Figure 1 (cartoon, protein in one colour):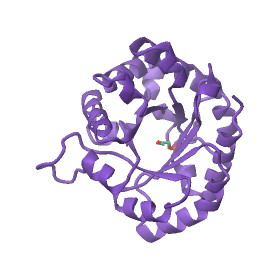
Figure 2 (cartoon, protein in one colour; figure 1 turned 180 degrees about the horizontal axis):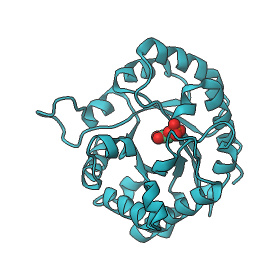
Figure 3 (cartoon, rainbow, N blue to C red; figure 1 turned 180 degrees about the vertical axis):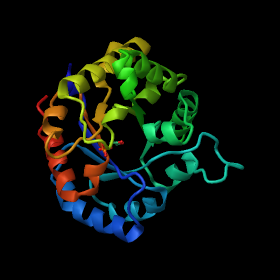
Length: 258
Ligand code: 13P
């Protein structure tokens, strides 16, 4: 559906990996690989690596993102980092609502919504993660779950702000398991999310809205996934930690057939 209206975005989610010297080394390896890419390239690194990543990517086409932010501007929230703190550093993207945050850190649709609004108000671009558990897929409620997550996360987000939001559809059963959704399954849910965006905003907004797939995307399966009509790139965990593999995925994103 109007794939030519959207830019492919390939984002690496490094999760809790890499010390600063390791991060610097990986970025140095990534630079020549990313330079050839015509898609958007983002790396979402741990907070401790943000400054290193921002320095190391200066003058390159690699954009830097964080993996979470808090919804309050400042205050007594030990261990948290605000959206303004990230924006002030020059961080461009933030991943919000990742299933690991929902699963291990008590994140709910309501707190994801608060974080989304705070991040957008600070001028950050949001990669909003949604996705169903295996049992929810088996119960036949994937669309209900993903639709609900999308609707709640976007409550109060204006048409204008939506331009700074990407959704990553990440079926929880496919994350870090080696079990990828088939290209058809990925496309089906991404297409459904697009219809939710059309209902909430407009068809024109939905046509321009970037929806990534994430969950065991790798050098072997990226091309097929990214070439699906409603899949506009990927959010990549494990394979984003290997420059060669990430390079193959960037190539798939750059050569995507509109
Ligand atoms: P994997 O690519 O390691 O399955 O992780 C996907 C993910 O959770 C990206 O946010």
